[in-house]
Amino acid sequence: MTDDFATKYGPWAIVVGASDGVGALFAERIASEGVNVVLVARRRHVLEDVAEGIRERTEAQTRTLPVDLTDADASKKIIDATADIDIGMLVYCAGGDPNYQPFLSNPVSAAESLLQRNCLVLMRLCHHFARPMVERGRGGIVNFTSGAALAGGRNMVAYGGTKAFDMVFTEGLWVELHDKGVDVLGLVLGMTDTPALRKLEYERGRLASLDEVPTGAVSAASVVDEAFANLGNGPTVATGDDTRMAFELFKSMSRNEVVQLIMQMSTEVMGTDERPGS
Image (cartoon, rainbow, N blue to C red; front, top):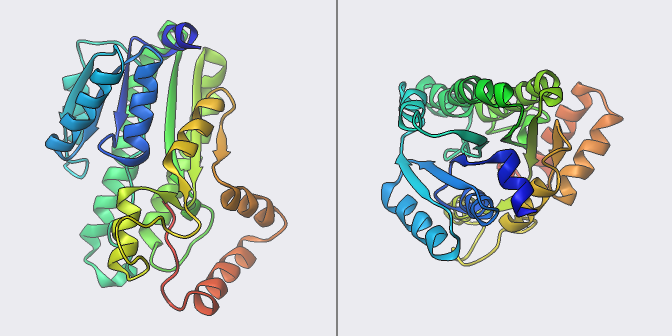
């Protein structure tokens, strides 16, 4: 697969949200297929550790680009820093919700930051990097969304809204680009075992230690495997059995019924503190 992969998606890929979890694993998997990777995330020292590991285990080149995606000029920084290389694949897997609180518990600026990071930067990068992919007649775009996109839920008002945008945006992009040689894939994640999720669950008292795996969470490696198995099978792929079951169940229900079901589950099963998506 390596030669074909590198030909279609190389010579460089950019992975946004590459500091740990699914993003870091995705970046290393790309590198193992012979494609150089630009690693983007907020924490420089963590990115450098990921890059070092990739260089030790693969022959790929790496670049690290520490950027706070909530900054107004985040997309410009990324675009400017990669102007001298050809990007054949864009992977946008940033966008978890660090707060998981009621909408009115935080200033509206918290929701605006989610909108900036999860929607505006993603849209701008897709617009910039997709054009040369279309001109070359090859490339790939993978955007990560969440089960929270399927219906509105408690403590995920703005987050779920941004992830719904990501899902529908990616589906529309697939419609426009899939016959131009560019693979576009939206991955809908459910509970996924990442450092960020473990930290959130630990702080909420659901885990006794950060070494525990959250109940019901699938491994980050399994998500990466599903992504690579479905790069050409867009526009939308659900990862994990729970997310796939939700897709099937919701097909037979109205939107109102889905929201009522989620509200009932969060109240009766989990109290007022329902589990987050990814």
